[in-house]
Image 1 (tube, rainbow, N blue to C red):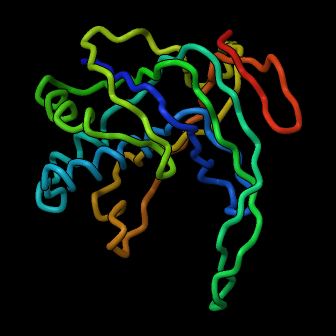
Image 2: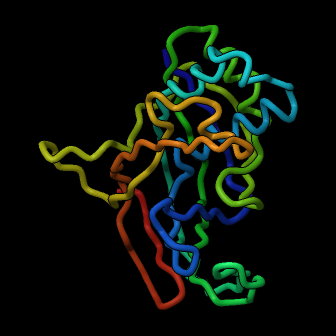
Length: 217
């Protein structure tokens, strides 16, 4: 079954591709499934006291949830050079310049969740409305409402046998067999991410050296 959660972006959004370096990074246009699930786990632990390391089933609900998107409106990508602290080997942190993109979304983002049953849906809806940011800290989103009748996703998975117009980006998600220890920052286990190429139905309409505007096709 499917339901959706609607969020309104309230600040600029930035989430660098997992393949990028800290020195130069373009931003994804949307929060990745991986970042959405990590935001959910953070709220479930902080506010609900969920013990994912004791109950494998509740972690598997999150891991196996299929996430898709319905987008509208425009995106303005701002190019910035910012100062960051970077460490080389065992040297002290030093200030350096890094390239970043910050994205202004002018419309509501609908995130669509596909789960196995109503119990799984009820568990997700227990915490999704408590999430207030995706991606980098400070990239705030305001929860608006849930919908049991979501729109059809218009962000599609890339398929060589079908032609979709738009912008191609790679998004990551939890691997099929990943466990809670694999995504736990305090564990020595390494996480495994699955990667998917998505086609966003937007096209460039205007650009300059400091920004680029994209609109829905």
